[in-house]
Amino acid sequence: MSEKKTPVLEVKELGIDFGGLTAVNDLDMSIYNEEIVGLIGPNGAGKTTVFNLLTKVYTPTRGNIFFDGKDTAGKTVVEINKAGIARTFQNIRLFDNLTVLDNVKTGYHNNIKYSPVSAVFRTPGYYAKEREIEGKSRELLEIMELGQYADVTAGNLPYGAQRRLEIARAMATEPKLLLLDEPAAGMNPQETEDLMRMIRFVRDHFKIAILLIEHDMQLVMGICERIYVLNYGMLLAEGLPAEIQANPEVIKAYLGD
Amino acid sequence: MKEKKSIFSFLLDNRHRSRTISYAMVAVAYIVLEILLKSGNLSSLFTGLLVPATCYLVAAIGLNLNVGVSGELNLGQAGFMAVGAFSGVCVSGLLKASVPAIPRLILAIIVGMLLTAFVGFLIGIPVLKLQGDYLAIVTLAFGQIVMNLIMNLYVAFDSTGLKVAFVENNFELQPGGKYLINGPMGATGTERIANFTAGTILVVFALIVVYNLIYSRNGRAIMAARDNRIAAESIGINIAKTKMMAFVVSAALAGAAGALYGLNYSTMVASKFDYNTSILILVYVVLGGLGNINGTLISTVVLFLLPQLLRGLQDYRMLIYAVILIVIMLVTNNEFLKTKAAAFRRKKNA
Ligand SMILES: Nc1ncnc2c1ncn2[C@@H]1O[C@H](COP(=O)(O)OP(=O)(O)OP(=O)(O)O)[C@@H](O)[C@H]1O
Ligand SMILES: [Mg+2]
Image 1 (cartoon, rainbow over the protein chains, first blue to last red):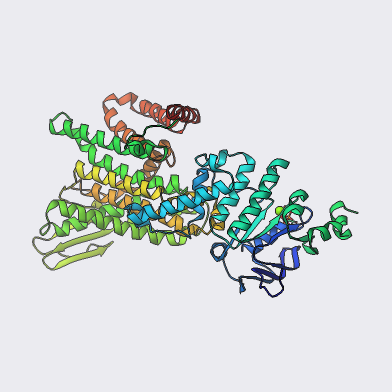
Image 2 (image 1 turned 90 degrees about the horizontal axis):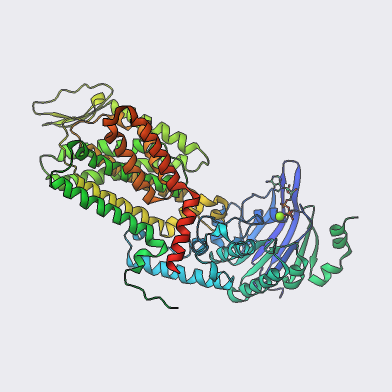
């Protein structure tokens, strides 16, 4: 990473308390454009909480989050997505009763618009925009290798496909930064291998930054260019995969004393 | 193998099948009933039920958007019908001398619909920001409040103009003056300008609005907000705005239905629109299947007509009614039948 580039995401001394519990504290983090960065740490380290802070589900107790050079303080969940941050969820959250294709189409809600009046009266504008939404959604389904499932109800998808659908839906909001919370959880090694290829393709094709939480070290070491390690809500280490793998502090945090 | 497709195949693909069936059912019902009506083969009891049936259909189709598609419990649909009914009656009464019946009916329905939409919007502002059962409680209260307000409302006009009073009826009318709404006695002396054709057109209008909304960007957002609020917000969907749209459209359709209903009777009391009526419409929607418009059409017609037509069977009436309720519930909400139907469709398409 060139030092002169401004980061797409910059986190400064970020912290949050839940009552007496300090879940995240004094976190500094920078993500640059077109990077794939890992966020790892033992269970309960505060990784998902960081995602919830970045996406405004939680309001920080301390510190600042700058996205695209602008302070995000006071923004809502909806506004932060419009600004360009999209995410997936550790515990899958799909629109279970909609088809796979409609789940992705829903992601274009703010980027390809027409009025409800033109929907009710089926104006030419409605058809044009719907065609555009359909085309782009199918393209995302192909990228995430979900084409065959387009008309399946999302709730009936196999587990691994559900996780990939969450990524496709998030990408439909055309983000600059994509946050993936344990995208390979519950996948077998072959599925994980395929997923890594797709994540890399998404980054290369759409030229976005990706921050991902993952326990699967095969995936983390395989695709992350930089890694942050969180322990008890604090930053334990930051560096290249090889550095992290060799770091005695990290090994100790993972294996226990 | 490539299938040869007829130009009409779009009518029966997965997405459009239920919509096509809806329109077909309405068209067939209308043609059959009109023929019976014109040839004098319909009893006067049954004839009198046609317009109110279309009113309940429109209100129920609207409510399904709110309860089934958007997933919010609304116990005040009758209150919205009341707003449309009494405003529609006033519009028609005021324009009686100057506008012929058909444009007057259309105008009354439009005014009733828009006014009710606005009332729905006002109610929705505080309520739709909250989660859970608040909407059910507030809409229940709303329906009762509207009913009681109208029961204390006096609207009249004479040569000096329009007069409105609340609780105490203290105006003296010039000779030739007339009450449009007379407090607890409700709307009186209304000219009956509603008819079955207008009701059917309104049903088709309701179907077009609801189906076209469901198969659109807004419809997807409404269903997304229902299925998973947190995920919907995470992709930039404004939940309150989305729920508001379903709520207001549902109210507007109830208002239109109310206006038509009001103009079908020479007298109408506000107590007709109490919570029993709201619950009744909700029962049509729930038994027809949440989000299932065809189910709503069938269950509304059957459940509305049945109690009336079973009058002759006195003792067995409620028993038969209960059995039919259960059968409808089983047929429209049965997982086994749904899976069978899906399998059948797949086989047919293969
Ligand atoms: N809303 C909340 N209220 C109270 N405590 C919370 C809340 N959210 C998270 N926590 C606590 O913050 C800590 C960090 O949780 P978090 O879910 O961020 O961990 P994680 O690193 O994602 O763990 P895992 O790998 O198991 O997913 C935990 O102790 C958790 O109980
Ligand atoms: Mg987590």
